[in-house]
Length: 214
Image: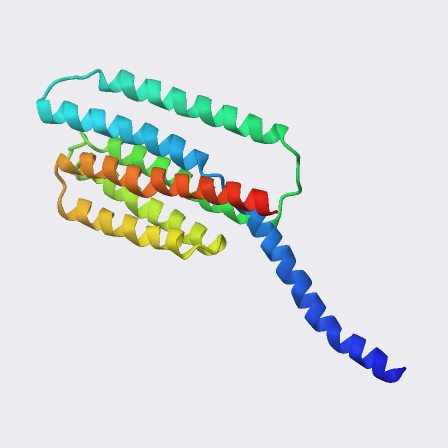
């Protein structure tokens, strides 16, 4: 009888570890992103950057301001529809990975938006106190912040390839910093397609596969 109790007791730590592992795995499955926001915003910003790039190259106004306004409204409308559709699905309690993911992209997104506004506000500021900042450096700044977001999200989601995208964005940012020309706009648009839209599609396929297996 004592041996049975001892054997059961000896299994408890293993069972607890398995249970903890199961919770973590289930949390990761719940955290798995379907990739749609990456695809939405990647395409929207890439199109805006491409129009801006072409406009600067040919030295002709292609109604860039109106294009960006329409794209941003389309983006927010798509995200609103996406969030509403997600909320209509079966509700689940938020786990710690959800909170971490929200914190990562919330902090990086807020920093990105604020930083771009501050940089652009200094473009024509030249009173001798604060140096004027070239608008092309917004691409460099965006890459640095996106690198942080991708790196941390990859670690949380236990995806090495997604984590390594952070190094790709940082490398692109260094190139843009050392080469502040009009061509960084085209490079940034290309990086959005290759390293945000395409990864978003991969995440979407992974999400569907894990949803079927769950």
